[in-house]
Length: 71
Image 1 (tube, rainbow, N blue to C red):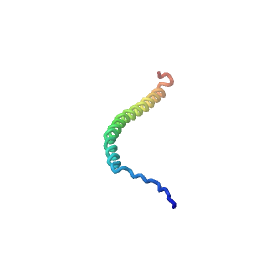
Image 2 (image 1 turned 90 degrees about the vertical axis):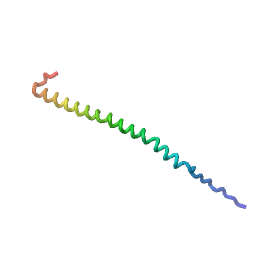
Image 3 (image 1 turned 180 degrees about the horizontal axis):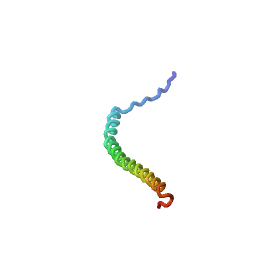
Image 4 (image 1 turned 45 degrees about the vertical axis):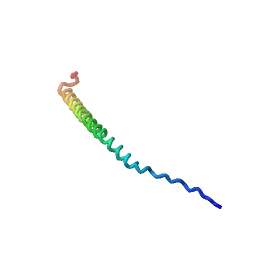
């Protein structure tokens, strides 16, 4: 008599979909808050970068007008 062992196929628990949906719901608010905070931080970073660029342009223009004596 020949017996072959069949691989045991385990199915995901029936509640796995519920757990997944609950996990997504729980992470939605923190992710939304994180995005909002990231944007609030990013906007001033862009503004600082723009102001530094303007400052450098003005400094270079002043240097051209007055020569190399600008401090």
